[in-house]
Length: 491
Image (tube, rainbow, N blue to C red; front, side, top):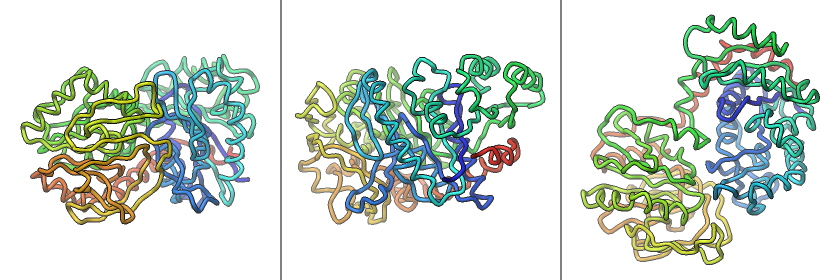
């Protein structure tokens, strides 16, 4: 078995995903064969990964974080890198994905009871992910300080103690209270868990790090743990795909540019990193519009992103008044792109006869495409190579969706995927729908698409930008952390 080290946080959103990705790239740069692993993830930003040994299946779902971390390692993602993925559908329930495949739906309380069974899958994947590797870097979820959940934990100390993986604790100084959060974690952890922690690091520091010297001494006094370093605010992280929708609460509009792209923030928004390549374009301003705010009247393009709960988000879309904003946008001659769930919303109706997504089984669509969608139990999960119909250019991306869409506007498909027509385009060409995630990542297509909107685009190799950002993060970690010590403590 490969050696392993685990990063756990004093809380959610402390930056573990980027740190693991950076350490993976740093280890790879040292010539190590490294793999990422996250026992349990909760996110509606999913990626399609290989299911080893299953040649007849299109692929399985993992969190986008482990997809990014696999890129940092220079390897193809596998479902064993994230054996348990929870995709929230309601405030109290989620779809449960195990080793890439849908296990079923579970309410929060039911899921806690299910965790014992899921540990077997986690340990099975753990035994497979490190085969042929020198090092596995593990990412925790939430915080080990949630001791009320400890008895059935599979994501933090429950996993670390079972797999005997040493832990580095990550504290986030940007949110404040980092001394209390690190010392408090030490205080409340049971001894069995506390002894798994080999030290800590401080993340997201801004300014003169010497000003925190007394803080480090205080933490050492309370905990006795060694500090592996203080990581500055990583500017390059902004150029990496974001996994957790919590980041959307902090996204602000940038400077005004030639094209404003408005993106309504759906309650169950999914795979919103589809917008990242557009954000990277110097002439494009991407504005994520939260509930309670109107879609900006000066937007030239509205993108309705994916959703884990299409009917539920469609109802909220109307409740928020975005349907009226969208109709006014179209009347002004504005363009619209709907991706996956967003594509389904653009039609006349969405029906869910088997109540797959919830108790509401039918909703009126936004009526911008002459199509209708019927939800079906079988889920499409696959990576795809495709071709844009309007621009005759190659596309690469993936599909993760339920439902079958038909109607007159599908005679104008937006893409050809594996020889099959996908999506729909309105008669005037200004409304486009597709089931394909990742289409804006195709540089040539993105450039031509923006050109059709009167904007100079393209010239950016988006994937190369992600690679450069990973290299920059790795270099910062090498400069500010004792990576030698962290890797040496892996066992």
